[in-house]
Image (cartoon, rainbow, N blue to C red; front, side, top):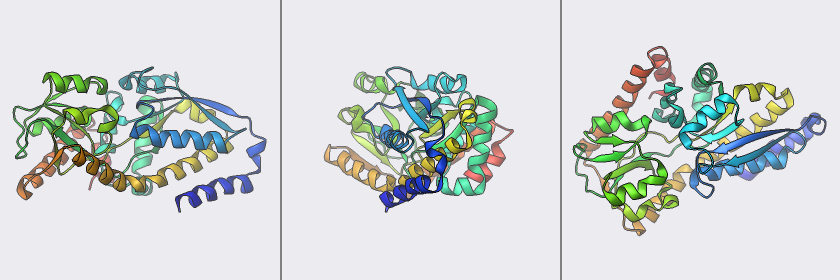
Amino acid sequence: MKNNFKKAICGGLLVCVPWLAQAQEITLKAVTAFGQDTYFNARFKQFVDSVNEQGKGLVQIQVMGGPESMPPFEIGNAVRAGIVDIANTTGVFHANMVPESLAMTLTRKPMSELRDNGGHALMDQIHRDKANMVWLARLSDGLQYHIYTNKKVESADLSGFKLRGVPVYRSFFQALGATPLQVAPGEVFTALERGVVDGYGWPSVGIFDLGWQEKTRYRVEPGFYNVEVSLFMNQNSWEKLDQPQREFMRQQVAWIESLNETAGEDARADKQRQADAGIEAIQLAPAQADQFEALSQGAGWQAVETLSPQYAQQLKARFGS
């Protein structure tokens, strides 16, 4: 079904858009915040391969490197300045420039609904105004974060825990009583080994890409939030594309976002792999789970309201439950 969808899009372009052969080709410089062989780079690689295959003579993407060449928290500035044209990253990494981007992770609504209800258009405009960036596509949808620890968790009170976190769930960790610490992904293994942190927040997939399962004993259930990894593009670079090139890119975006429906299957497979590796799932009791969920949403949206009083209510109306 997915392959047919892609073929239909690509076939439609070739048949219905005669300018494919005539338009002048443009090459976009790209960077990714995630390692080449990691889960959160795989969808980006699919996108790049598809664009380069189907867009010959029209649009090509040249990947300049990953986190080894550009620290993830510097990618937003690189896109804003036009040092790169397009990036596979997350709004979490440039929340210092666009604090409203935290709402992209807080939402429980799928990207299709956000495109229909004006949420995507609002967030895209905020990015354009504040960071000279276009929110081009969402490459992850339907995956949750979890708290992973090497100390047993028995309730929604994590007082005394030191947890590696990022801006989007720093307030939530504080609401749980934990101390959030910002540690680069490449340093988490050592931080766990040395006791600098007792655990970390991370999606339901991907810990094996980083080897963290060796220092992880527990995963807390339920999960929280909706992991957001997206394609962001420099606004000037987007505006330099002519109409055929933009239409081609929109078609590629529609195809890549259609693949997000596999996220649930990916999460189930990775959780089984975690169990096989000896990571125990801790299911909080119903009352504690409800408190955990309430704290996650309450703290997350309070942070948005504090950081962006101008847009908080508009964002909550479109991104909130």
